[in-house]
Length: 58
Image 1: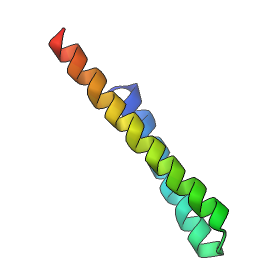
Image 2 (image 1 turned 60 degrees about the horizontal axis):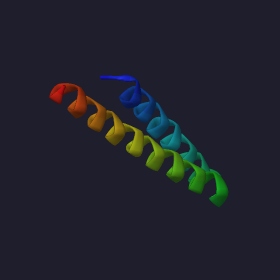
Image 3 (image 1 turned 120 degrees about the vertical axis):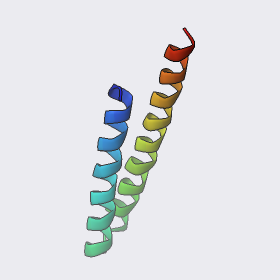
């Protein structure tokens, strides 16, 4: 697991917390920020996958 995977997992966890807090409080803005953070985390995770594949090929 490289840095991108770790950052991605952390961002997804942060997003999950924000999204849940937004739903709980009725704060749509916070809920949307959470969804955006989760999406960013997934992108970072995929970037980590690509980096790993490149390293394996070299």
